[in-house]
Length: 281
Image 1 (spheres, rainbow, N blue to C red):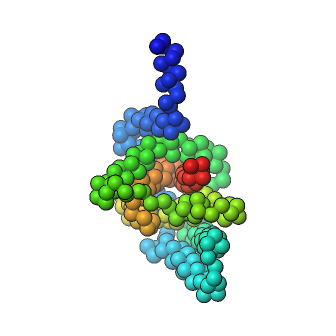
Image 2 (spheres, helix red, strand yellow):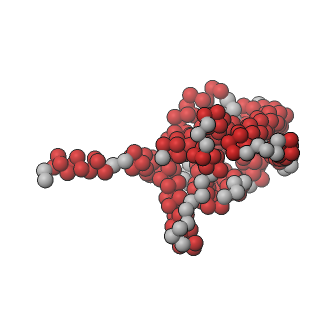
């Protein structure tokens, strides 16, 4: 076997995942070298100026929860025979409407309590052109760690519960694979890739992380604590390790840039890739 044949065989074993993970390792390794293992990376992070009380971020969360819970309860009472994909469609419409209401409440809070209003929160349209490519690089840099945490969680589950243990899918991914209706799939893509990332990042990063930063000296503490809060808001415990890695990246990008578009893009890209991979498989 000559050298060219060896190279061809090696090329045939390389997958897209291998290339993405290799690029991620290089990007993350370069970041570690440039920032003394991350210690100097947030030295120039500027706290966001606001006059929120401790309870203010919970207002939007409470309104969202009340609106969604009331609407779903009303749907179950008024349309008891709604089942299957139609029930999933109705639930996602409610989630979408609830998140949009939550976004409106957060915009009102930002205008009332943040210096410079929504720009003070980090929603400055002038930064979008540079936030998106950096968001892509940020997600690529932690992609190998997300894959590693998923594998570690599966191995741990198999050790505890036996070889039959499987990583539970997110509810929306289960619905996408269960029902082929185009209207439902388009709605789920809209909710998970656009509406939910905007709402969750405005809530967990824009409000909660900003509030945490006000009470704890040092940006890294706010990154870690807000990531714990974000993870615990998700019901599936098996997803927590990978979500924590993702959230650390998202929270870091917010502290580093001061722009909320960067976390939104990372969140949207991650959700979009998850749906694309699920549909492809």
